[in-house]
Length: 283
Image (cartoon, rainbow, N blue to C red; front, side, top):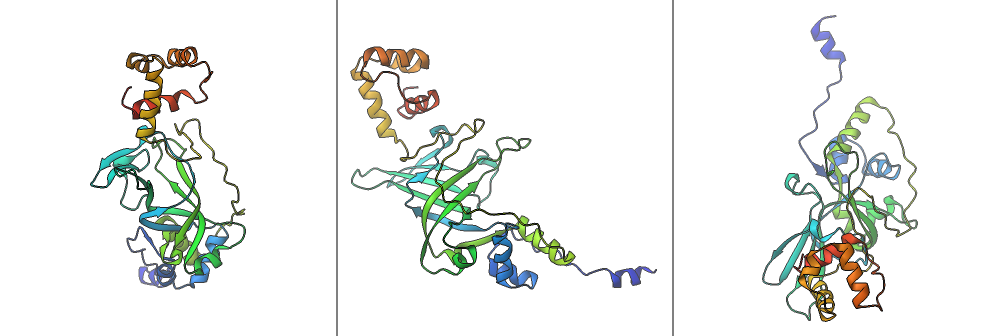
């Protein structure tokens, strides 16, 4: 068979344009399918659905937070902004997920937690993704950020989940990422059905940690610098010194128990106690 004949029998597959992500509507136009097809693949677990944010203020009280040493601080005219970009902070992209926590200088103002980048959208037992994609106005959902691994050779990818987040204008925020765009393209060209996963809607708000992730979980919100300084001042009032704060954590625990018997054994782990001391600037 000649080269010309071979070329005529081979499918003319156009390469995917260099998009990192796009809307479901854009994806359907790229591949000549229906938007409903995109959401069918999302609902079956064949591909993932993300939502895009830029400094979006959230009101969730159920947030997994990482230890203070993983946050990057900056300040502006309003207050101190602590941002989290994941462990691989210097090798990320503009659309990776991030959190930004504002501690205002004005004590009368409330603290703010905002999110940016692409967050994975999870759904509850009441609404399917088909319905969610068509909803106007606000909708509560579960958002998860997936970060680059601590080490490239590690199979563990750290994540951060926000529960019961009220999101406005959800349909306009929905995105499909490039790896899934390529997956769709391959299966449309081959005609093979994409493998499906059984997706059980997440209704629980349980927080989990991985021993290797170095994470600290908080159910009640972030411990601020002012709160840490207040804790340290209380310890100083009971006779503890800066030397004690810089010494062994085990010895510090014993001194606290001796000087403040009503506390007894301090009900926080060593990493949490160290974070408090660092935030207060005494360790």
